[in-house]
Length: 93
Image (cartoon, rainbow, N blue to C red; front, side, top):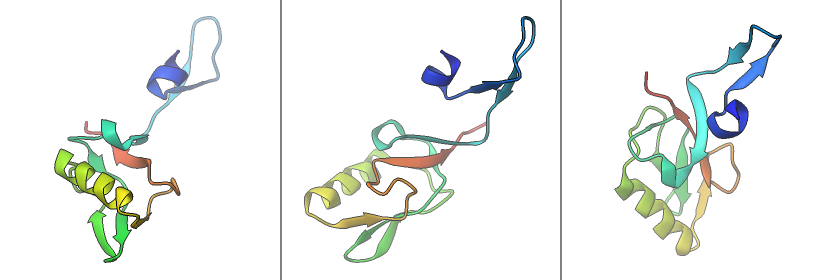
């Protein structure tokens, strides 16, 4: 359940102990990232100007523009996910 629902990987477990792997980086579907901080760049060609850069707060307006660009047939690039449906984000502490 921890891995499937919360992306927390458990290692070295025994009857009374676990070691959990977490990091400040995470990935989620774009539509669930409003208010989060981008951890990678996403750009649209044309015009070839970044829509999001690492450290920038993701807003609904930005997500709307990404979907608009996708519908118009623009090439979205820059994320590890080649389809630009998920983006690495920085978890706020």
